[in-house]
Image (cartoon, rainbow, N blue to C red; front, side, top):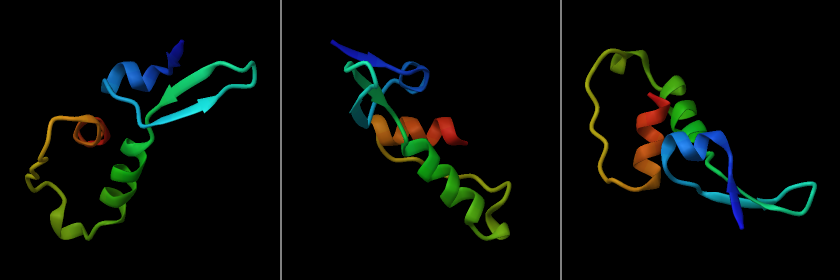
Length: 67
């Protein structure tokens, strides 16, 4: 059985699967961290301006979570 961490439940998608210390399969999502890193590293000229997210699957859900 695949267990999910709290972010998977919140975002609604998982991207990574790893084996936990006790041997169980765990699902997690790290896409939101990559999106957040890109947003925080971006030029200040985009702050407060609208953005569009294309898609409806895992990566786009992670982008919405990262906002």
